[in-house]
Image (cartoon, rainbow, N blue to C red; front, side, top):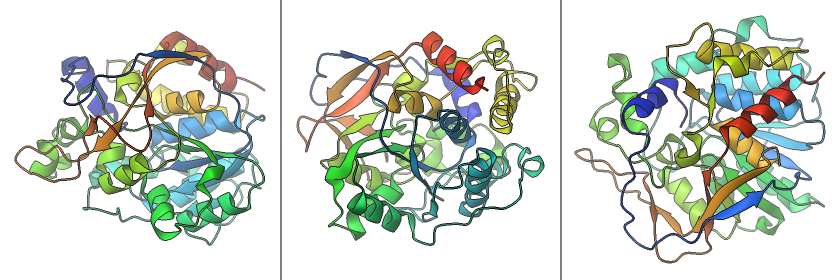
Length: 366
């Protein structure tokens, strides 16, 4: 998914390694102009550092109607801290009307998790959380995330766009546990997920530090991306559904980099923008590890909300491998297939310059 160590290693070693297509040839690439602004948007998130950047961007977009934040514990932040972070962000942005609902810490299949020492870094937002806590004005919606999603879709009078930033467990549980959900009210799901024609990022994180080593299941997986690997069955359920889906995989995210001189162009006028800039400075400014850091979830966010004026995508059929093999693990790998319920739009070509300009300009608005 997003960890800095992963991508630094990928930039050095394997970002551009193209693996052979095993099934069908991809359709012709399509250049898309900016998508429309969603009438309503639900963000499903694991509250990692770039999820926070994404939500910060949305909070600076008054034209975006946030219909809810659903938190998954199957990802970067543990669910308890995800709760705190989500409520804090809504309170910092004075979006007291946005419901926040919690999902599960248990994936539908396996027990894939980020190493806990890495999660600890995410849980307190790189050590920044303690200085941000505003007076508590909000509480959690008591419905589980999948129930919240279902009931919101069943009662909406306008289409809802879903931005998936932390795995598919909540969405898949809605499809499994609430089969009568009016999924026709989902305009589209935009998901930061997958590695289609490039290497994955499970093994690089696992092998980056001794304390992050979780064994061969992780150490030998050079194919999957974290948001799919964390719950491969959930990803497969969503891939196999009829819901329109745009995937923003590592193929695109690996090309979007925020350099220190770009970060310097952010002029924060409020707590939301200040937090975003502090996070970015940690990774690409004063706390830089010496190599530019790609950004992931914010790219998906700009594409989902019309913030990126153009990008290239390819409609293809995709499937997810769910079998586990610790000696050479391909679990969570996204593969091209010859047919499916519908084609998935896979974003591959993006402009780092256009992304950076829009992201920094929006964060700098008073």
